[in-house]
Length: 265
Image (tube, rainbow, N blue to C red; front, side, top):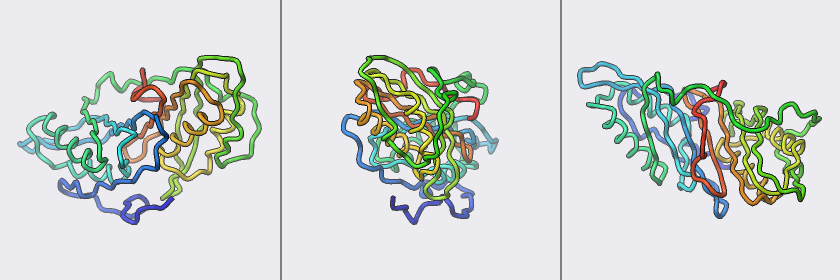
């Protein structure tokens, strides 16, 4: 993967002391799988700005970037951008939301949603992923690069939801670990659970952005297991006050019922 030399990831940077949308950095998405739906759901826990009086305001924000946008937004550049708002003065929340939506939409090349929430919003109560957790399966593995050959499915038709909290990949720029909980919802031939867990664990040394990793999982499961429907949802732990939670599906643009925060987030 070619890494843009303009990335702020992995570089020592100074936080802007005034509103500066120019720090936002787009990353070109790889070719998309035909028919793939979904979105990248972000939570920003460090949002602050000012009223015209100079009094600071704080909130939590959710934003979503459609997976079919030409570009995703590099995470550190988003952190720098959001921090550039710290002294920016607006009359109310709606004015700030409108400003941020316009800036992020321009970078992503598609309509981005952005909404502010108060700190005590029930939207952010800690919850859990639904489904059968694979983590106690007695597997043995020493394969830590993505290996789709672990994937297989039987002819028995099922509808089930499977989860794991053992996923780890690494950032392709900084090589820092990225931890996530994964939820896989599908209908079709029953996926071999031990093989699926070994496949998900095999990302442990893989260098990839969150969004790219989820698209790889989605594409590999479709190819090797041939489900009639499939959704793959990842809730990554936060870094720099941001978490990124990609969702890819054959049928849905958003998770039908998605938790807003897991215990590790």
